[in-house]
Image 1 (cartoon, one colour):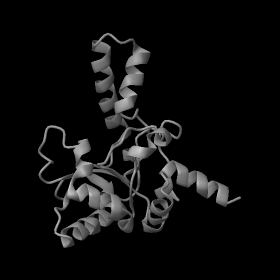
Image 2 (cartoon, one colour; image 1 turned 120 degrees about the horizontal axis):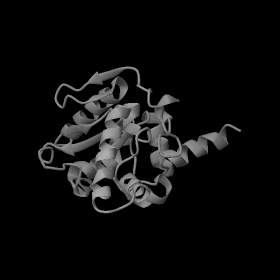
Image 3 (cartoon, helix red, strand yellow; image 1 turned 180 degrees about the horizontal axis):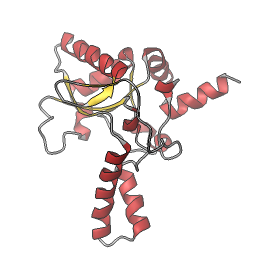
Image 4 (tube, helix red, strand yellow; image 1 turned 90 degrees about the horizontal axis):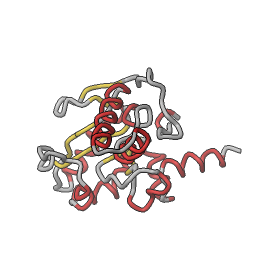
Amino acid sequence: MYTLQLVNRDYPLASHFVPSHLTQDKQSRIWVCKVALKAFRALNKGLEKKGLSSLFLISGYRPYAYQERLFERKKQVFLKQGLDDKAAYNKASQIIAPPGCSEHQLGLAIDVATWSMKDLEDPLIISFGETKEGCWLQNYAPYYGFILRYPLDKTTITGVSYEPWHYRYVGKEHALTMQKRQFTLEEYTNFLKKESF
């Protein structure tokens, strides 16, 4: 059930949580859980078989302390703009998950870009979803165990803006069921709770 663990502002991880079985991708030097990296490599082979560009890992596992630094930096930007502490926190949390609230800490979430986008100042851009690779991912990632974690039409459910680059490993069976039912992870975990009673 670990692959289905929900992590967000309502279900934060402890600061000391570190996933087991982390491994480093040789190309990007990004750390990810072994099962997710194996699935990502298979997914890349699937892309290449269709004549598309393989993807580059931009982000994977993030320790609590790293997420804390990212969040604090963004919060400082808003404090310098004159917002008070609470307003700066709220504004920053719309862009970056507060520490403990990022599923990157699980080691099962990945941010990806095409090789042509990886050297951009910010390779995580909305237009990734419109690339051939981004469109293919939305349709075929579940066959490799991944879901588009923050879809455009489900922002009110996830509480996170559309992120076409952010995929979460949940396992093939769960991913295909979620795709068929058009569920987010929030909807799916609620569905499973109801089904178990």
